[in-house]
Length: 420
Image 1 (cartoon, rainbow, N blue to C red):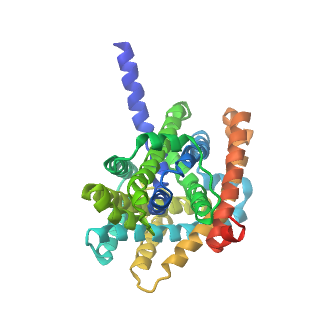
Image 2: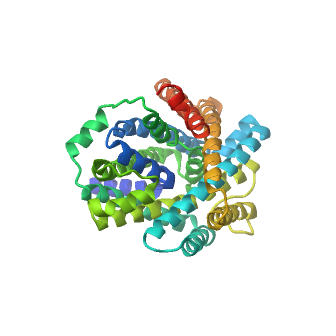
Image 3: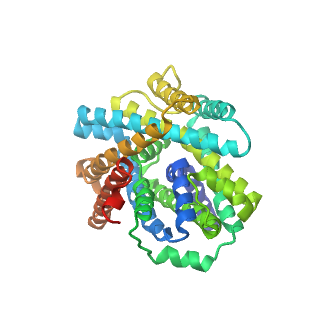
């Protein structure tokens, strides 16, 4: 009886801290992520699956550090950077974050619109409805309500494993490609490889993760449960990414179908894997896009307000935290309006946001490692020597790959010129 009661208490405790980890990791599979994995599967079959387990490890390492800092210090990442490194680097970091996340928000609304176009819904209807929905959710909801809705959105990602199963792949071949690396040195393979790895850890994710843990008020003694939340979220993200590649690899790759984005993948799946697989894929894209379109402006608002010392938090309102809510509102309105404006340079905006993300990431990762190893700040919760080795290696690899991603984005013909 006592054992059952203890187990029940543990489960309830875990459910109380569940959220930040799985939500932050799930947003990693946003419209851009879904498009990248779709192209990887459609153009290269299962040959890029081996990159996903190391990607998951990198994600766990960085997300765990952000969560640990939030729980131990009770302060957000922007707060800590301002306190330890001064106002000037914080200011430039925040300006870059706003610019990058505006571009990312545009990309998410574009993904949302294209998903609904598959069902015959015009973007002039889907964008205002989607933008209004995420605005009302955050502005009128409490943190508890917002988090519950976000967790439901995470559950919708299960449409991708179902779509993969409907595609009837050779699971033995899938398993082999997950553990046996396939290395090719042609330009398109290298470019998609860099895209998959270089966009895994976005700068905004660390700020959102730490802010969410702080707002949730997780106590140090419950941190092991938050760590489970982080790992669980990253594993779910891996499963979704594998499913997208498998669904496209088993169908589009086998038929030699070329695609440009996730919408193409959803449409092309219909004759090959059935209408249900196509609908599930399109519905997954719509969910991923709107989910990220609500999280990215939220992460930006948290980051800027905490960095500037302004009030922030979903549980506040326009009167008590005006900067937080106006910034959130502005990003959603501008992001949605740019997609609706016929002559808006969407490709340029998304392209620049990718470049700004890439430039920003090394600074964020190095700041985090400096902070997490500060004994004055973290006490006994600093990184161990082993964890530091993994974290610094992950950081170095991410910096190199993101630099390559920026280079390939700015100079698309670079891999070819290097003889790849």
